[in-house]
Structure formats: C-alpha cells, structure tokens
Amino acid sequence: MPLEFLPLTAPLSLLAVGCLAALAPKRRARQTAVLAEAAALLAMLVATATLLLLTLRGSATSPLIGVAGLGFSVRTDAVSATMLMLVAFVGWIVVRFSRNYLDGEARHGAFTSWLCAALATVMLLVQAGNLFQLVVSWIAVSLCLHRLLLFYPNRFAAQRAARKKRLFSNIGAVALLAAAGLLIFTYGSADIATINAMARAGGEFGAAAIAAAALLALAALLKSAQFPTHGWLTEVMEAPTPVSALLHAGVINAGGFLLIRFADVMVMAPAVLAVLIIVGGFTALFGAMVMLTQPSVKTSLAWSTVGQMGFMILECGLALFPLALLHIVAHSLYKAHAFLTSGGAVDRVASIRRPGPVAVPGGAAVLRAFLAALALYVAIGLAFDLLLGAVHKPPQSWALGAILIFGVAYLLAQGLADSAPRMLTRSTSVYAAAAAIGYFSLQSAAEWLTAGTLPPAPAPGRLEWTLIALTVLSFGCVAIAQALFPLWATHPAAAGLRVHLANGLYLNAALDRVLGGWFVRKVS
Image (cartoon, rainbow, N blue to C red):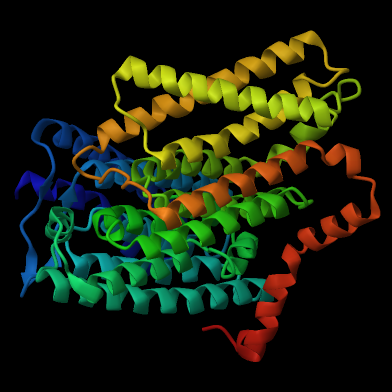
C-alpha cells in the first residue's frame, strides 16, 4: 500500500472498535472502552507520522479508490495534517475522559460506539482528497453527532436540540451536495487539489463557480452554528460532557475547515466573503455579549463557542485563511479542556480569595488605554515588517489584530485607572505588548507553514474596505462599552439589557415557536 494511504489507518482503527462496541454495547462496555482508547492513541501516532511524511515528501494526494473520478482518496498537506493531528489529539483525550466519566452507565458501550464513529468520520473528512469522500464524511459526522446528542433520549431538551441540529444539518448537506455538483461541472474534476489549483490559476469560470462558493458558505454557516441558527449549540448541554468537548474536535469547526479547504474557490467570490464578514462578525459580537450574562459554566462556554465560531467565519470572510486555521487549533484545544474541567470550576472559583476593591477605570483611563494599546500594536507590527523584511501586511490582518488588541485594551484600562496599583499598571502593559508580539509571530508562522497551500489575502476593494472599517468600529465600540460597564451597571436600562441578553434576545425561543410541534414528535 502506498504511503499516501497511511492517514486512513487512523479512522479505520476507530471504526473497527466502534463496530465491536455496537455489537456488544452492554456486555463488554469496559473492554471496548479500553480498546477505543488504544485506537485513539494509535490514531494520534498515525497523525504524527503523517506530519513527518508531509515534512519529508511534501503535499500529495493518494490514488483514487473508486470509479468515474468519484471515491476515496487521501489529501496530505498543511491543512489536512494539522486538522488530523488536532482531531486525533482531542479525540484521544475525550475517549480517555469518557472511559471514566461514563463508567457504570447502562449505555456506555453504545456511547463508545458512536464516539469512535464520530471521530473516524471527522478524520475521513479532514483528509478527504475527493469531493465524494468529503460529502459522505460531512453527512456521516452529522449522523453520529445526532446519536450522541440523544444519549439521554428521554430528555425533551435533548430531543429538541437534536432535531434542531438535524434540520440545519440536512439543509447544509443539501447545500454541500449541490456545491460539489457545481464544482465538478465547472472544473471537470472531483479531485479537491485539482479544483483549488485551477481556481488559483485564474480565469473566468462563470456564475457556476460563484454559486458553488455561495453554497459552500451556506453549508459552513449552518455547520458552525452561525446566527440565527445557533440555538442548538447552546442546548447541547443535555448531552454528556464528553460530547461538548468532542464538538471541538472538528465537528462544530468543520464549517471553517470547509472554507479553508476551498480557500482558492472562495477568494473568487468577494460578495460571498462579504456575507461571511457580516454574519461572522455579528455572531462573534452576539455570542460574546450573551456569554457574559450566563450563570451556568457550561452554558457560558457554549455561548463562547458561538462567538468564537463567528470570529472564525469572520477570519475566513477577510480571506485570512492561515489565521482561521490557527484559530481552529487554538480554540479547540482551549475549549475542549474547558468543557472537560468545567465540573470542578465552580469549586475552584469559590475557593479563590477575593482581593480588595477592583480598580474601576473612568472615561479618561479607558481612552488612554485604547490609544496606548493601538499605538503599541502599530509600533510592534511595523517592527515585525522591518525585522522579517516583509513588504506590507494586508489590511485585513491589521484590522483583525486591532480587534484582538481591543480585548487587551480592556485589561490595560484596569491598570491605568486612578486607583490602580503600580504593579497592575506594569503587568497590563506587559500583557498588551505580549499580545501584539504573539499575534504577529503566530500570524507569520501560520502564513509560512501554509504557503503554497492557502492563498494570500487579496487586495480589498471598496466594499471590503467598508466592511473592514465597520467591523473594527463595531468591535471597538463594544470593547469600550465593556470597559466602561462598571460606571453604568446600576442603571435600570443596563439591568434590562442584561436580562434580554441572558435569554439570547429570545431568538432561540422564537425559532422553537416557528418550528412548532415538530419537536414534540417521538425521536427514533
């Protein structure tokens, strides 16, 4: 067997254990859980070997297993190897955690079966070299997640979340299937590398290519729980905790992966990218604001994921695909750990000794903080340009960095408050500088590692400049309002707004009412 097929051994081993667990879900639950952990560890070793193979031999696509240009093939490049390593590592942690977490559960074996199947299908998705494999894996991931969401089938909230997710998944699957058909019609091939190469080579491919990009965007938005289809993600807490962590192993962020995988096709459709900026930016702001009002740790983490997925879509809309890939990796690792450790979070927070009164920054301190953070950010960015010999960073990356530095400016404002101790001022200044240095360092590393695989961000036109300005302004206003919140938190309007935000502006409830009795039917 050619070495190009090496990554296939990772999902195949998990599928074998999943089938074994399905055949004897009750009698050998502990034994199959041990085998699942071993298969997940093997998958991680295979992913590591795939990275080594990529380093030694470069990008490649395996021979096709299929007919008429449709079938299964493995694409090994910077994107697939990174995602495979991420899925394998997070999957191994989740499988290991669930082995103890569900020990003694009556349906432990069934859970292990669907967990292994979900990880296997995600691995097949991220290494897909052919559109047929991509579509089949995409649909299979949704089916496996549906069964995991219904681990407690008698819970009405779980039924509602699963049915809502299935509705959006079905629409997304139809969109992806139509997009695949248009891509084959336009480029005359189902090979993903060939499609991207032809798209990067340029040329007028007509309305079919633009329609394919729009359908890919629709499938990605639905998969990644973008506004207003985000409701199911906040209800996924009815499933066991390992399912919440599993979402970040290439499930909820599969939409971002899809856009990154077809980055060369997406940059040909500026109008589609503009829609991604609008929807992703709004979802990021909406999810972040609602997250701050949630009393439950896991619900707060779920709303955080909504916001982070919106930010990931925003990055894709700005055509910053290397940064979007980096965001997927960083957020997945952080959020999977956060969900798995959420059980003891309340006890740890309660045991922390509260310091004295917190320094509350006034309007002048907030203004100084934001101006200082932006000045520091620009200075470090220009220094990186001189150090690395770069010609110029694209405006999109400067805008994204400015949005990130707004969060640091919020912390810096605490240090510049009149009552702040000098140590806090020094610490927040160091954090601001470290954040700017880290952003430009990671950005440069991500672009270097994906050079030749992902396209550079195109020069923005008038529409793109307008959206970039509106995005930066929107995030800046929200960050300033958050920094000034202690000054107006006692106002009745602020209390009312907090109640509305805590309920997600009632959008999910409105969607439930529109869909009506569809959720009441018995779940099979």
